[in-house]
Length: 243
Image 1: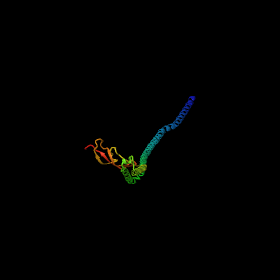
Image 2: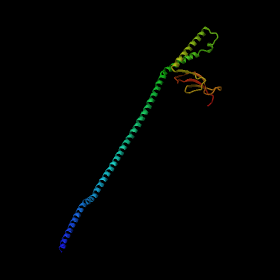
Image 3: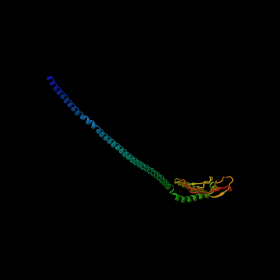
């Protein structure tokens, strides 16, 4: 009975010790599980904070890129407009330069022509006055009959006439050579076709053996100064047709 009475309290004590140890173990496991529970509870809020910050950064970067692209487009458009204006200005100045060069060359050519014309026709008034004297010399030579010049026997007076004629003829030849050096030439259109730019018809006459508009007689010889008609020749022209 005594062993039995002692064993009962002993078992009760061991039971209480096991219960106490289990309680401590349960508490320690509970306390160990608190940080992990807290961590798991905080993880969603941390994820949401990082996600919001990333979205904000991405949006700001996108806005910055868009703003940079817009600025670049504006700068490009401004530069393109400025380039077009400069190109138009260059074309305008190039056109002005080409026109100026052309005008200057035309001015040079016109000046050269005017200088040449002034040089060539500087003696025009003098030449007009001189041709009358040449005409008088030509008329004087024409008054000497050819039979007297070609006579087999020449008297003293006839020989004097021939000598005078030859002297006047030599003078005329030298004068015409001198005038030719300065561009003044005499022309006789006898036998040529009538040219209204060089000839002045004083009369017309029919001649069946000749064609129309042929010069058959020269009343007054013409003169040219450097290729330009100074005085038209006065001529008689054939006119066969009745019309």
